[in-house]
Image 1 (cartoon, one colour):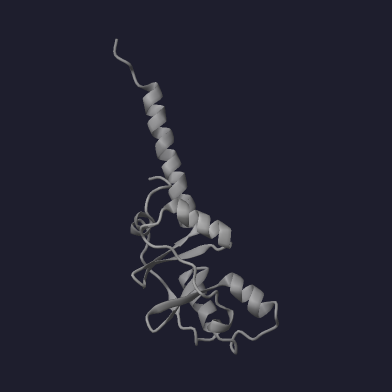
Image 2: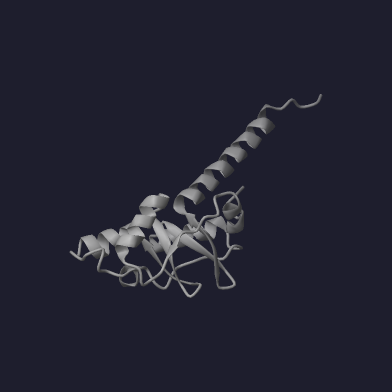
Length: 149
């Protein structure tokens, strides 16, 4: 595991569930799904294509703080669109850079126009920590090994 690993490897090591919502759904329904699934964002899909991402942050900033009703506001009114995404072959480092530059915590992974997964900042940090632990373990083994002669 390291920073130049493809995001595909991260997806292969996590649950494959990708929760989505229609852009025409009311925000209240989207928030219900997020609460039920214990996620902070949903992919917004229309006719099988990723058209945006809606997050708890979008809800807080674009509904609550603006005094709108979550039952009367549609997802398409508050979602981040166009969706920022990476491909499965892009690296963990590329993904971290995109998330940092765009100030996002959930990153869709799209292959040939099809949504194949989502990585969160937590997924990538976990990947990096595991990679660092492996490196430290290998270095420790190397340093403490017995040398012949």
